[in-house]
Each structure stands twice: as C-alpha cells, then as structure tokens.
Length: 167
Image (cartoon, rainbow, N blue to C red; front, side):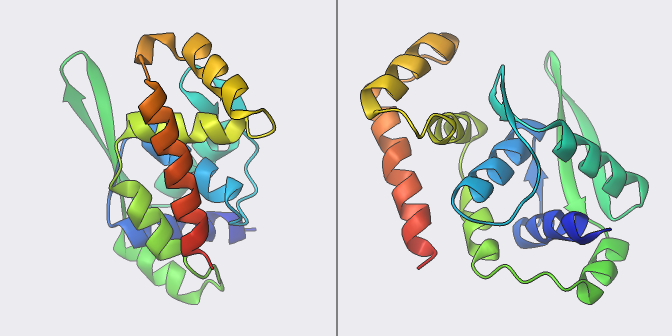
C-alpha cells in the first residue's frame, strides 16, 4: 500500500528539502515522463501538469508524520517547504524502493527554478507535437510567463540532459 508513498519519500530524501508545491508537482511529472515509475495521473492545469493524487499523497505523508510541511508567508502568498522526518527516514530504510539515478535526477531538478520546471513539464506534456506546435502552445497557454524561444530551447536541452544522465 505504501509503495507509492515510499517512492515519493525517496524524492524528499534525495533533495533534503523541496520548496514549493508547484516545484514538487513539476519534479514528479518530469521524473515520470523521463522513465521513473511514478503512478500519479496528471492533467494540464494553470501552472502546467498537475496531479490531485500527488497532492493527496503528500497530505497523507504529512498526516503520517513521514514528511514535514512548513507554511511560510511570502508577500501575498504562502510557500511550502517539505522535508523528510526521522520517522520518514526510518520507514524508508525498510521500504524496498529501487529507482537507480533517482537521487541524482531529482537533486538536479531541485536546483532549478519552479518557473523553469513549469516550462520543462509543459514541453513534456505536449511531447507528441512538433517543436513549433509546442512553442505555439506555450506562447498561448503560458502567455503571462513570457517564455522566450531561447528558454524553450533550454527546456529541450535540459530534457535531453536528464535523459542522458539515466544511461
């Protein structure tokens, strides 16, 4: 039952701390798209791919005291910080989660901004389209983010880098 929870806890263990719900959503989506066996279903939402299942799983982990969620007021919004608790670490020691390269991959993603990960996850969400069609979608759906052609190309380069690191 807690296999999927343990996979998610592996992300927190690898990162030490994840700052932001949006960032966490994008990290898990990207990891799933580049071949990690996360089972959460994602739909396109305001900030790109979003999973209600992932939100509920994080809430359950908080309720079980396996991860700690700290809510901080930042200007006009709240920001959330997530860390693995000692109880979570103890549970993870007994969980049989085998995902080679996960630690390096999510630690790398955690170093990126939520804005960039939103772009990368959006590019991956529309991966059946041509690069031109993806750019058109981004310029339309993400107009307020004001992504540039160069940033979109950086996203493609970053996706290839992540995939190459898995080999």
